[in-house]
Image (cartoon, rainbow, N blue to C red; front, side, top):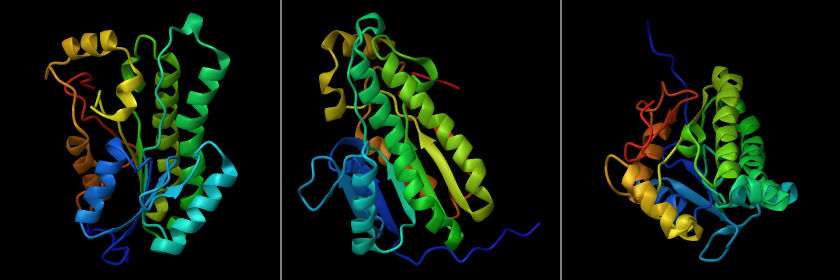
Length: 240
C-alpha cells in the first residue's frame, strides 16, 4: 500500500506557540526556531517580541492570531502551551478559582484551536499540539480544577483529531509530569517534595526535555501516524 502524498507546508514552517514566553512554551518555541521554522509567540506577558494575548478572551485570541498571520503567514503548526496552575483543596476552592482555571486551561485551548483548523484543513496539512498534564490521567491532591481542565484538553484533542484527520490535520497532546518551570512556583514546597518522592526517576523534568516531543509530533514523516495520542514525558509518574 502506498503512503498518501500531501503537498505539505514549505520548508520553514509557520508555528504559533501560546504561552511561549516562559517554561515549556519557551523551550518549544526555541526548538522550532532551531529547526528552521518561523515562530510567533503569543503570551499574556507580552514583550520580548511576543504578541499579547489572553487565551480566555475570544476577542483577544482573534486579534492575536490575526497579528501572528501578519508576521509568519498561514499557520502550519499550533502549540497550545498557555496555562494557569493554582492549588487548593476542593472543599475550600472558590468558584472563581475553579472558573479561572477551566477558562484559561481548557476554554483557551478550544479558542486557539478554533482559530486555525479551517486554514489547515483547506491546505490539507496541519499539526496541533496541546499541552495537557499527567494529572489529567491520575489526578492530584489540591489540584482538582487543574486535573479536570487538563483531562478536558485530552478529550478535546481526541475529538478534534477525529474531525480533522481526513484533511491531514493531526491533533495530539503532550502530558508532561512535573517540570521545573515558573508555573509550579505557586505550588507548596510540601506538595513538590511529596511529588518528587513518588517519581521513579526521582526528579522533576526540565522544559528542554519536553520540547523534542513537540518536534516529533510536528515532524514529517516521523509524526505522521500520531493521531489523538497523549505522549507522557513524566519521569515515570504515569505508565499507561
